[in-house]
Image 1 (cartoon, rainbow, N blue to C red):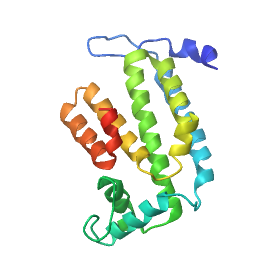
Image 2 (cartoon, one colour):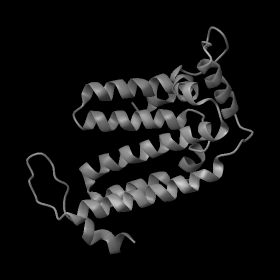
Image 3 (tube, rainbow, N blue to C red):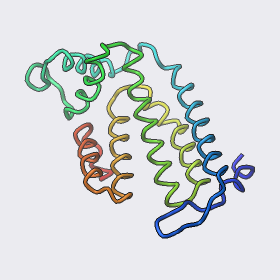
Length: 193
């Protein structure tokens, strides 16, 4: 597939100081490929939009408690950083808790992670490698499993990838804030920082 698409993606990305004109079809083709991959990924993730007997139920319950006004560490025990609950609680507060909505959070976080990695790869190594990065990330077995349950690793990865994208795009303050959110969601991000 990549060898067949490679000629369409062979024009380098426009960078500051580089004014190479690109045919209008190349960015549109790239966008169509990325959207098609995203559609297949999201379609694949819908199989997991049901209740499961995993530790994510603790996090669902904690996020629901936070959405109702309780405070972790004060009103109930919680062994993780606070954004692990406060981000889902911000979604549950207006929408109410539901299993499909809770299951959509890790899948959505993985979509954000993949798009940030794609944007980073696109600027650094080109279009074909960026699409390959997206495919390899979204469809890696461990990532497919981790994006099914709201254990926090998916949110932490999304914050970290977004922070890395921002920092490497010259938006250092935003990058710092997003990487801080990663640390506020999961302490294991320290290995990546």
